[in-house]
Length: 267
Image (cartoon, rainbow, N blue to C red):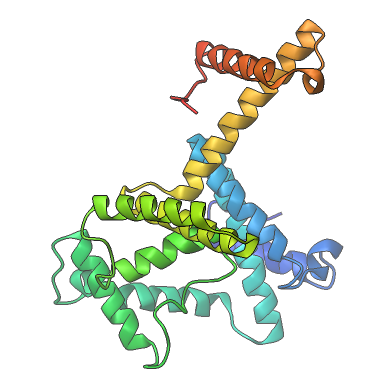
């Protein structure tokens, strides 16, 4: 029975044991490819715990995510590709190299200076013909990818001088969307519109993925409340007129706000 459960090396030994010839059939069967969906799922569960602000749940979900990392490292070690120590060594070296204002003689008095220096160091690490955007995974959700791209280019000064400039651009994109004739043009202009919204959110310090998840959750709670009201009153939601649905929606909003679970809802 494993001891010292609060030690990282205990987790490493447990995973190795699970992957051993006489270990767990499920764990032994896993590959980098088969674990992809589990890694993504665990990452989203960490985000959910962060959104909910529950430290106990966050602690548990971080453990599940850490397990995925150790599993991938164990699979790589068995194949002779790399070991967990290489992973740790690599990230330690990267952190030291990219923080010369902490571990070296450079200075950075503000967050903007830190980000500027960080991008300069990353540029030195890249080949001259490699874009600074190539380091951003295109497997990210589209909104998160857009926000990462915009953060990256803003570090080299490719940004609006003020929030007003970005908001004016939004008005421009709305106008172009309205003028779009074909479905293809509408799709392209709508993409530009969303991209501009992402940019405004970034400038205002709003994480768009989190904001949209919260809106989704608000909509879920309100619609579920509508369904509950219909069930209590013997109403068929499908057969209600749009005006009746709107009235029910407003009632559901008031009910949720009155229950103390409104979370500042105004949608």
